[in-house]
Length: 121
Image (cartoon, rainbow, N blue to C red; front, side):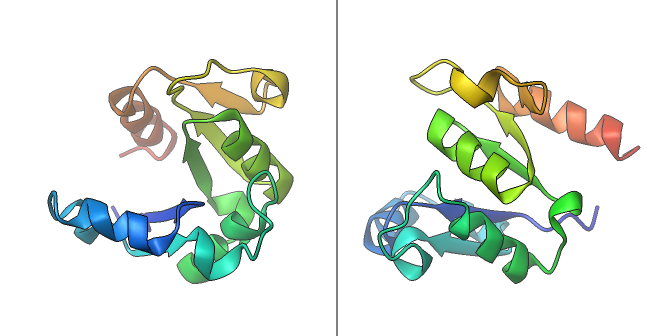
């Protein structure tokens, strides 16, 4: 459907590469941006990693959507001015995550349904 999909993680590249040995999931993404490549000590909720992701994807923030599992990542997306969906992991939504600008879903199947509906796919 011509949707550019990337990973923007605060995790350092060497740890991300450890996950590569469990399968080819990273081959499904257009880019993987790790924290050590961009953050320079300014991790989430600083928006830098998402702003760099926009640049790599070649899209405007109005065209983007961040999917996050934690409140700090949601905060970073909001700080970047990007719409965000949260699929809570260990911590339930709190703070700015509870604003109307953030959608909260239980799993990726719900997110995929939402994306299909919004994009008439």
